[in-house]
Structures are given as structure tokens and as C-alpha cells.
Amino acid sequence: MATLRDFIVSGVRVKLLKAFLEDSREMYHVRDLVRRIGEEINAVRRELSRMEEAGMVRKEKRGNRLYYWFRGDYVFFPELTSLVAKTTGLGFAIRKNRGRIGKLDFVMFSGEFVRHASRKTSDQVDVFVVGDVVLPELALLIRQEETKREQEINYTPMTREEFEFRKSRRDPFVLGVLMNKRVMIIGEEEEFVS
Image 1 (cartoon, rainbow, N blue to C red):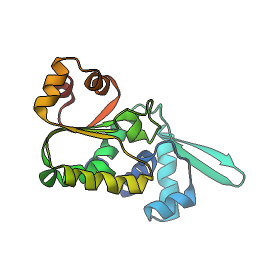
Image 2: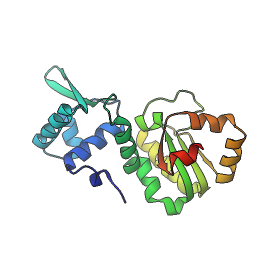
Image 3: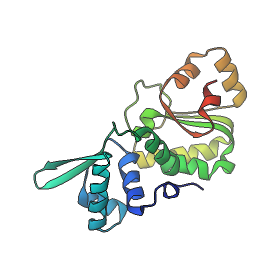
Image 4: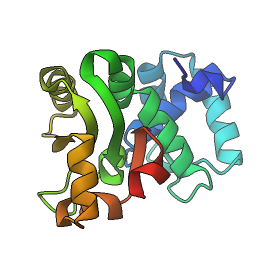
């Protein structure tokens, strides 16, 4: 199974990217990052310096501590966020258990869900799954992620036939899913929206 390590050779950078991009709104103190990723402090400092030089992170001094956060305006922010969403957390669990969940054509996470941002509306879907879904298996993975995030996840499973029918009828719910920012976990985006 593909992981970030396939694309980025620095193990420390892979762990830092996961830490920063699993919740890109967070700021982290250096020692907090060391605890989270389980690496030596000098290796973390060295990699943070390289990431800052590359324009990936910013730092701010508060008292006697330095805090770092990932820059939302970094040129590859959307791509890295997508990679992290696919290789960690719920995205990884769905891909890993794909056979048990059913025959999945598309799995999409909303942009807000990936960035841990609040939903624009209460009925907005966080996870949209199209295919022949084994609901108890999907529900189990969703509940595990809800426990980890300590928040409810709005998810909608739908058969491919229903999805295509509702898309052809310009159903408001499906159009809303298609119009919002998303990260495709399974399936091709062009096929999903066409």
C-alpha cells in the first residue's frame, strides 16, 4: 500500500507532514512535535529549519517557546493535504479495508473534513461513499474516527445507480457534494463529477 514514505525520503519530514496536515489549523511547539512523532529533538529542529526555508512552515516566538504551523498558502498545500488524507486516519483505514467495506467506486472527503474545519452547514456531508457498501463495516470505521476526533462525522453511502440517477436529475444534495471542495480517497475526480 502506498504511503508518504514512497514520495518523501526523509522519515522525520514524513512524520512532521502527518502531524501538521492531519489538523492544519494547529500550532505546535518543538517539544510537542518531538513527543508526537517520536524523533530526536535535533532531527526535528533540523527538518523544521529546512521546511521553513522551503516555505512550508512558519514560526512564531511566544515567550521562550517557538511555535510552528503549516502554511495554507504553500504552493503544494492541497496536494500534500490530499496525500496525508489518503495515507493516515480514516482515509488509510478505508483504503486498507476496502475489500471488507464492499465494492467502492468513489470515496470523497469534504475539504473542511480534511482540514478539520467546521462545516459550512449542518447538513453538509463530510464523507461520501459510492458503491455497493457493507454498511456495518463502514459504520465501524466512521465510529472509530469519530472517537479519535471527538466529533460526529456526517457520512452518506449511496449505490452507483442512485448516484448517477440523482446526478442526472440535478438533485440538490448531490450537486452540493459535487460543487464543494473535496479530496478523492478512492476513484477519479473527473469520473466523479462528469
